Length: 114
Image (tube, rainbow, N blue to C red; front, side):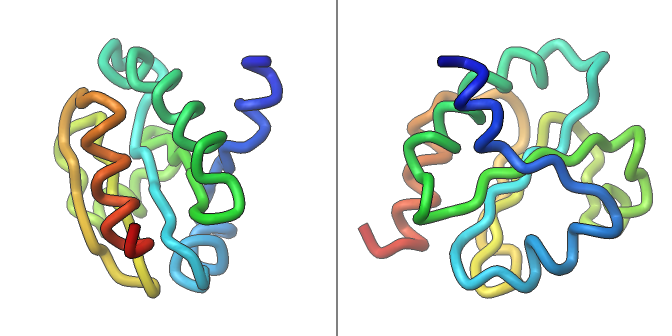
């Protein structure tokens, strides 16, 4: 089951970010992370759960800050994990640090009007 959930998380890079995130009609959650970051690894299962919970209603994505430093800098990500939630191509919410699933669900539900 974990494999199926992992396939629901979109891995972004500089080439796919604009179309996937800024051009999306539905809310997009972007997890700015790095493989060496312990809290980022602890957040990964929550990100996968969110991807399954919001399938078809919101996109759930990950962006490796080591591979895509320019994007991390553009969005002023100074600590990780940082989760930025976009609505209509604009930043709607930002959650820095390891949080529980409810914090992310609340922000997504707010954007979805639920």
